[in-house]
Image (cartoon, one colour):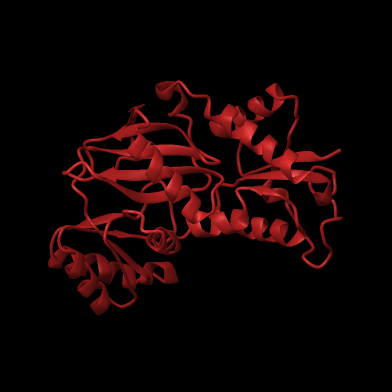
Length: 293
């Protein structure tokens, strides 16, 4: 019998919803804690997982790790072993890296903020001034709006860059610079499952960072034909699956894709949209299992 594994760091509201949706569909997923994983990389998929079953028994593994690095490494292992996952390794690897996401969107001609990449203090200043003040400095990897900085002038840019240069991680010395978009105190998060934009929310905040994890509030956003088209195109550009597409509205009303999340949180989104996101995602996952089988 093919099994479903749910690979997690913690059982959050999203994982509880996914488990309930699987159970409602007649499937009891095995919850596998990433901290319990101890894989012999030379032994292959026949070795026993923390669940007591062989990894090869799984017809699908749903990756929901909080740690990006844990999730990516394990997805790479499962891809090598031929074990289907949601999302797959290639999609996750692109979405986890803002530089790769930007490149994937640019290759498909999808509208996004002007973005530059630099690696030294001098070239970072040049990049910031090329997009113009204010500009946004982001880490190439990361979530929940952490380590974002809006720089309004050269003095603040130099101070932030000097601080980052004192930090030892190479990610701090990679300067991903975006033009600041004067959005209307909100942005949009749309949920794409397969090739369908199933729902979307506005994330409102007085602060320029609107993540609900940082205190932003959610309300329903109608999925217009324009929003649906750009979200589905963006999802396809990074490989597709179960994704959250974050978009910005320009003062002229145009939509720009900002980021794409491959292990999105949705606890604050089902109520305002009236869409059971977990149920839709699980239906898609089980259909993928049937197609693969």
